[in-house]
Image (cartoon, rainbow over all chains, first blue to last red):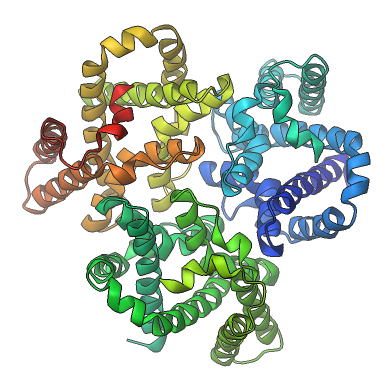
Length: 206
Length: 206
Length: 206
């Protein structure tokens, strides 16, 4: 298993835990929390695949994402106390997952023959829209609309990625640079509280 | 007209009435209630067709579903009192419709070359997601997230269906067995009030 | 640039301003308002393209729509006072935009081999669904469900369009007739307050 596959699956797991935890907080039943876990984990990539016409959507063509999301169910229910203690590690994993989803989403968009500007946009959509759909289904106002830096970091990373490709940098190096930008911008923004409303820090506390 | 077509159209009609009735209750205007009727009736199958890439989505390739949904409009407005008296028959038709939608959705997913696990999931999506979209558009918390058994019955029926196909049971027999499981599980769960919040029984009361 | 392209882009701009203004009113951050602007401007056409299977969705295959939406961002922030004074011109542009989107959406649906009834429906969806998605994301009840005439005008225009094509009227003439019907119905309905709740006039006031 390559490191890309590892981060992809780890990011999916952390996203699913985020959705399931939101469902538990809202007193949803088992199916409801599972649905929230699924849309949070794969909603962004699903929207990207629909828009670019890469169908069936990627995560349906293998069972591994479904297994990972199911794995998130007992983890969220049984270890909710431990998860709270692990939240720094989870936040790191979440941030690296977001960074990877952005770059992979941008590359898949370029592969579909679309422009770099569209690739930046759909890369960010891949990373953040799962959380938006989670909030719409849970009938709360999407967090993303009040927490600028989360999505802004993805947009910045996406711009770095397509720009480096443009000047013929090796794709693997462009990928790592873009991911570092996303992780660093997000950490610095948390550190200095840029564009963050303290009451909206729900997502990090999963 | 085969019995499958008959149940499909009858299920569509009952689903559309459910959506239109929700719109009337929310004081939506004619177009708003019609939109709710449409998304409730065909929303689940639409999402399935989008995800597996079977486009244009099935119900758009013939006008018959549109006619059935339009038929639901005068029925809902003129006979709301009679519908209340008929609610047991409607609930039976709704349950059989859900059962059929689950099995047809699972088979269409398998036909698209996807796995049995995905088929169970998308079969259930076909049956229940119309109601979820209805609730999102009406800006209420999706009922399904608090009424476990509804979706659970579909998942169980889907598992029965793909398992019977796996052991080479005749598809027609597998279909009928799966539908019986869904109808029975749903009726027993109502009878014994499994996983049902009495205040959330809105859907059955259409 | 043909007049069709001009109205298309002008309509996109006015729709984007409508979404961005809604985001500003809700105190969304920059990314949130931008997302609202994008979905309002292109959401209807996106849903139509998904349903008929015209993928990648049209507005992603060129960067011009993205540039127009980005242009709406400074306009909305800097000239909000002037926009208020210009609201009659904006409303005219919005109405002509809706009329064009309806006809273009209907034609694209016919081109995909679908029926006239489906073309009327998806033409209307192209014109009005951006506003519906905007309201769902902003977590308010979709305005369209209480403002019948807006969507009704599109449906009437769509029926005029496919009927004129049916009797072999020249497509350009059918297009202009349908657009005139939509603009006139909408203006007359505002004039005589048909089906309009005065409190729901938010959209026109952008």
